[in-house]
Image 1 (cartoon, one colour):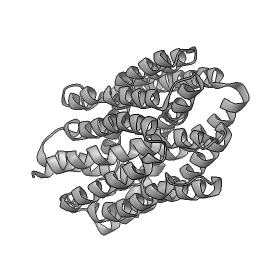
Image 2: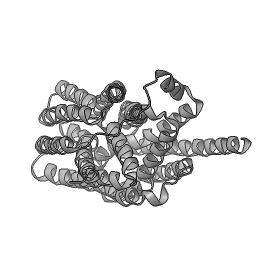
Image 3: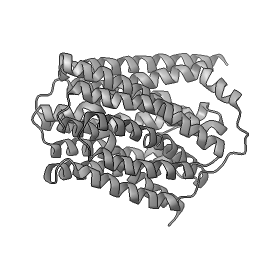
Length: 383
């Protein structure tokens, strides 16, 4: 099989695992009778682990100049731990296995995205043509998990995770490694990148826009169940969200233009605001599910533009680490705030107030993106 098709297959399987973990862990915890504050505590603690694990594995990858071997190790551990997680009931055991899965599974996201981007560059194809299959995998697995949880019980997620993990390992074994840069590793170049004002403001923007997305990812399933929806309906919601990304990623060669990244981020941030403002007023779970189709204009545009912008400002030899920094902000730090604060906010004030607050935060991200665009445009005109 051609290397690009192998990578597409791996994206399908890996993002299917992410659907099982990111989207359905809160649903699984809710089914075990945990409160929203305890759900937030477990997922938020996992986010702390990701802050350390993602840069650790990213730097190991850059230092050893291999992505594939690191991915194989992480996948093997994740498959075992994921099976055990979805076969557990005790709060302490659930907390422990969630922390371990954040340590091994979540670092695979930036490594996979780095492999996608570098392979696309080497083969002269678009990043979106590869990443599209990740969206397909997420969407398909969301639908499968919803049916499996409804008809075979919530613990069937353990068998799904173990099976998909094993298939991912087989495909990963056949993957070619990422092309290695000839530039030497320089800690000074990494330090300059991380301390650069443009980098700092970019990461602040990512954080402000990511927190609302992560709150939605964490509590959407719980919200649907609170409104009277079934696990099957939760699966359809995440299927709609992920499925709506497919065409956007597939057509990224057409709409993702260099130099337009901040404009695209502004566009996505505005639709985040609309999406969460509408969600705040929902009382019918079926309408809330339909609203997830607005993902078309949010996450795929936002994340694709963010990755392309990042690769323009990060030193070439630190790409895997730079991708990891982006993942830390989007899935780690923002995930901690979303889980801890979101869980407390949900329990103290209710879900409708939570999503109202989330929409205000999204609008703040939209305003910041407009300010940064104006500042950088003025700087370019001055030079």
